[in-house]
Image 1: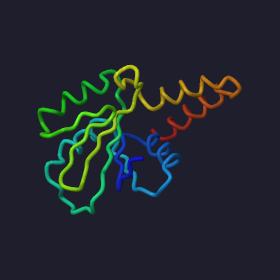
Image 2: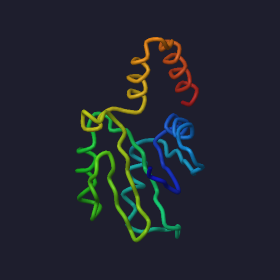
Image 3: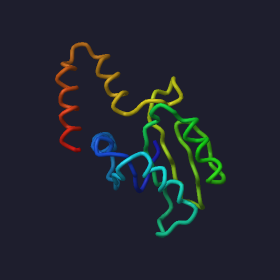
Image 4: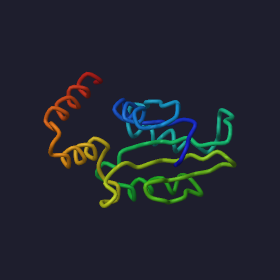
Length: 144
């Protein structure tokens, strides 16, 4: 399992989900959009704050473009990127920056965390998926 010192995500839904599934305490920061997460990742050329050896994760949805579009848009701006779907890595010494693209593995990581959750929920016919979906929609409306 990959461990990290800090995680930067698009939105509050991502943060809540990660807090539920990560087995150790880690700082999770909401940046407010995919573009903001990508911009911070692009500015990794210089480390402004000295950090201990470890990793910083950046988590974004693949949306319509998927992994390849995201990787191709970054490779010209950031040297020495490592392509390991769903990860895009850049290491400086013992500090690694890892951009994780969330989406359907069978479709170039296109999609988003909510669509993956919905797909999983629909696989469990004995669950009240309508109620769960309603709760997710209400939660997202409250967070806006």
